[in-house]
Amino acid sequence: MTRRRRVYEGKAKVLFEGPEPGTLVQYFKDDATAFNGVKKSTVTGKGVLNNRISEHLMSRIGEMGIPNHFIRRLNMREQLIKEVEIIPVEVIVRNVAAGSICTRLGLTEGQPMPRTLVEYCFKSDDLNDPLVSEEHITAFGWASSQELDEIMSMTLRINDFLCGLFTAIGIRLIDFKLEFGRYFDGDEMQIILADEISPDNCRLWDIATNEKLDKDRFRRDLGGVEDAYQEVAKRLGIMPEGGPNDLKGSNSMQ
Ligand code: TMP
Image (tube, rainbow, N blue to C red; front, side, top):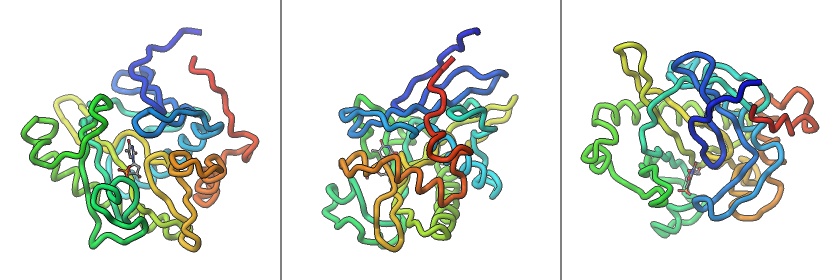
């Protein structure tokens, strides 16, 4: 078996070169980290679940006309994606106060936002992803104003769509993080949604009980991380074929 070229390794995913030019294989690991990698562990089955959940959400988002990098799922832990030049900005959408904004602005967790807030962070592990404004993004050339306008417009549409999708399965979308990239097709360049959408980068609370169904279970040592991710997959109707027993998947990265 030929070994694939590893293009990039992040905290939860590995990118390998894809079978055709302009494609990559995105491999979902079971590794979980928080606080910029300070807290580390593995959550058995997380990679398999995130692969499925992200496939589902990216596909639905694609169907509503928002271009994204997902092409198709290849196996339990891998999906084929379009290669993009990642814009080094994390786009955070907040519908309800939780996490870092509560400490930063003295808000109470669970307090609804006056309106949906979109924040930007500069994607840099070395600097701990600092909060930045549109001014920093355009001044330092991370994205142009026109690109940011497109990103903002896609982000708000994605938020509306995902809020509805999750409400229908009894989940409140508290906040989430998106990443975008430039996709080059000949002379054409298009901004498309990239990365993943999963309980690793969303806060998802049960509507009835406010139970956390996301990575905060890991960040805050609440236990039941895998069960929470499984519950999200179950409600989305996409539990892996073999059910919970089939979650391990092959860990092979060959
Ligand atoms: P925060 O409250 O910690 O700023 O997180 C806001 C949202 O962004 C939350 O849904 C988790 C997600 N997020 C990531 O996906 N990656 C990160 O590195 C951080 C800090 C947050």
